[in-house]
Length: 604
Image 1: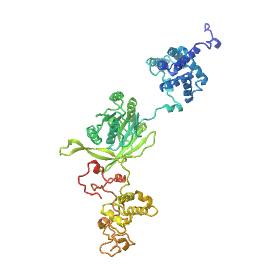
Image 2: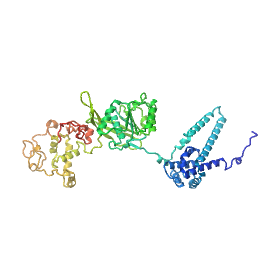
Image 3: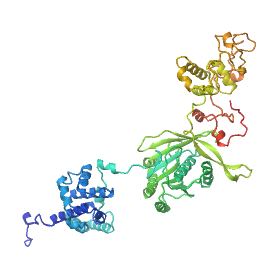
Image 4: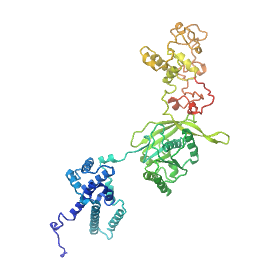
């Protein structure tokens, strides 16, 4: 070691040596891009943020790129404002240094100086590699060949840079870190169907088998493909790919019924009538095909049929399937909508819970009723990751006959379509006092009638209500007829509603003129064989009114059945449907054209 000259730090390169030259080259790059922003794309192909030796220069370079990408003017002032917005101005050297950078044009050739900066960065990396090799080789536990890993990593990084790829993985990862102010630059979720479904997300519709999940999904797909609002919800129009992995043979009838109902073709919807296994090699082919097509929504019907052989109760195996679904989402930025069955309890998707955590939205579909006339389909919004859960949606079913298609026995081939129950006019639920008040007003029944007379009126028209509800409706009308409320209430009543019928009783009730004067203390209609003002000839029977033939709901111990009947076909309505204010089945609605030709229950 005698022939080695030990250098004093003072003898090393001075301040104008290579390090200072590197700094000057970086200033030439930044100043040239401020002067001529058109060079920024070319410089980007040469440099990466981590190539700058000074951290302040990397911050300035990132701000310049942001301004350029957003079409903002690139000036010293705009650069300063952007750095202040990011809270990086002090770390970038302050206002004075930003002005110096902008004045450092470097001869107007930033691409040339960018090559110099990159060469210096490569030399620094090689020097770092050398130090790591020396440290590895001189460590107390060093073994021959231990430094080969460092060399392999370095060569891999250089090959990636030569191919224009990521460069140093650590630098690339650090560049992705965002401070709080930068979060405002992240794109927000873009709605696809109202607040229910969004682009670039995973979503799922779950429900028991046979509970109309596919009907709901086809309805959504048809509205997205054609751009129509989905039952009042905004829709972003775009191509839909429907992977029919289950029930492919029935899809045609459902689509044709939808087209007939809406009077237009289901354009923008493409069907793949077979499953593609998520863990098989063909899934990569599907991803590439969808990447080329770029649909807005991809439906997987069902999750189980594209994951055959996967143990559903294993979070590990199901997690792999969900990751493959995510690969499809990332490649297309579409809404990937899965259809899945619920378990035995019926409230949660079947299998492990790994899937739910990856979902942006999850909806639960179920139905009540035993035939198309009284079935009510309910969609519950079970999960919305970044927003509040909305209200439940309810639908009825309308039977649609397919044109020119018949079964062997001559009956038409039919399918069903959804009709929203939430978009119909808001009317009081049938069987409520409010509903009876509206019915009495519509039929111009006198406001002076008491409960017994209204009970008799309801019985003759087949209106089944409890006595206490009828009495509440009568009290409501009488209060409205009082002196204090008459002026306000009468404005809402039909103009021809009789208000002084003390001397007039409808003939069908058996009344006579002057009845109220003869019996001022009673509202009861006269009874056959009784004298003027006489009460009932015998004590009312405790038997149910249906046996007695008397008023509806005559006593609280034996209430009349509270299930309303359809006013067209005279059969019970679905209670949920009736509670929303409907008095006919959807299939019996005269406006649909599918009601019976001769109703068995005449309109009252």
